[in-house]
Length: 171
Image 1 (cartoon, rainbow, N blue to C red):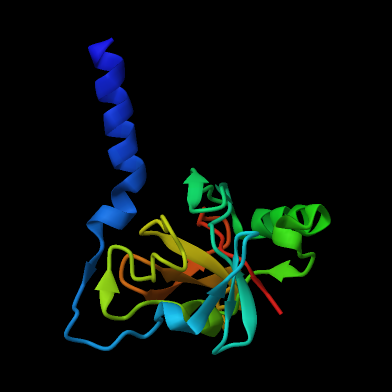
Image 2 (cartoon, rainbow, N blue to C red; image 1 turned 180 degrees about the horizontal axis):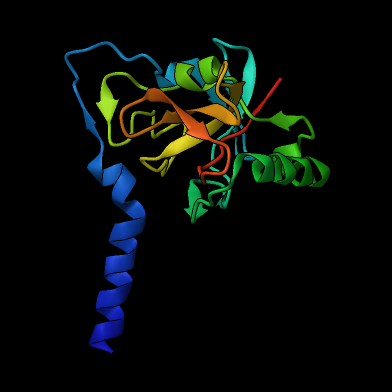
């Protein structure tokens, strides 16, 4: 019984790790403050700067009305596109126009004063310190696309056969 309790405590700490590990330099100005986002009850946030809507949870997680729960999933680039089609058919968060963000759109929600993860955890709870696919292909070197990595908020080129996470945006 004690082992099960310890396992449950350990699992709870592991799932909360993104929120606990984040480090922010409060002497710097916020680049993605919560005042920029307007949350809805369906698990999306309206980005008033871009005039776009973001799904609050990474694919694999679900919005429970208060936060994201579950585990994020990783996909190859083409598989991510298929999953997005399925999500649009299901009208996740009441929408059917989800897509991969451009590299500029995804990079715009990075919180530059924070790392581990470099994102506003109030707007995007339990975001992993990982790379997320964009729909921006790399010039000249194929088959590659840009990924924004939320460990540090930087962009990188990745091979489309690698597995990365997915965060969705809608117009």
